[in-house]
Length: 127
Image 1 (cartoon, rainbow, N blue to C red):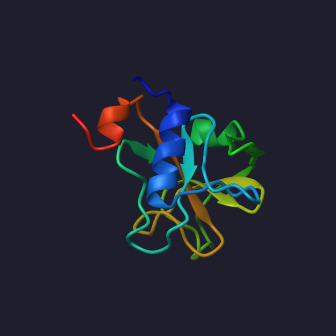
Image 2: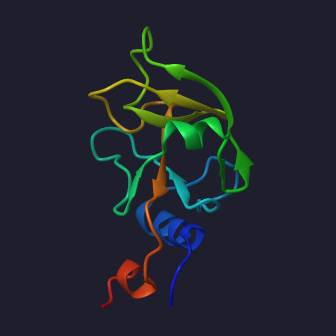
């Protein structure tokens, strides 16, 4: 069975502790994107995904039915921002140009996008 990007996001979100920011939602789905809720070095994008690009961030991503309105881009003067990529700050999407930091930091949760559809058997550990 072939999974589309949104289905992959739901499966990985449920299995690995990723979630959308919307209240009452445990799974991220829509546009094949997830929000990384694990803080620190272990909070990386899940396998098969990469940090959301500036173009995707600027388009105000929708994850788990919630729209994150693009706010701005930068790094200077923001020591608490996560590593380069898009992150959720409340209901806003912000693009960080910072380097050498974790994917998510307190109150600033990194957004990741799946690179390609995956086979269900691959995702679930089969052959």
